[in-house]
Length: 148
Ligand SMILES: [Zn+2]
Image (cartoon, rainbow, N blue to C red; front, side, top):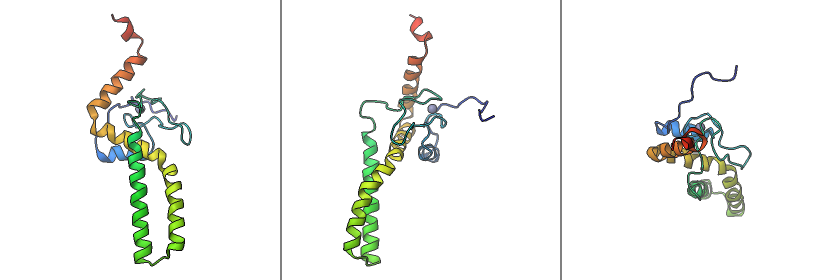
């Protein structure tokens, strides 16, 4: 009884909250059901529930590195300022600790950065996401090749 009998709604996220929710749960931005990752760092090519192709263009996920790099930089800078200037923690502990953070955090956050990039891209480019959906739908539909 774990199968939901209702049909899957396939549409880009309606709100920022829905885009954020689907992204942080690492689910497909179009249906909110399919998983984005099959392993720790291995991303699925398309949604197993609605067929939406995740990598919309070659190099599509390069943009997710901006999210990852930006958040790493922001957290490192904010932590340094608070710990060093407010709490007066010495640099002898702070610099190696933050350097370690700068190496580990981007790896841990990798999946969420990609998911956020994909989900918010679908939210802001609804038309492009729906066109992508129909293109990937036609690839899987054997009837479309018989029509001509
Ligand atoms: Zn999906």
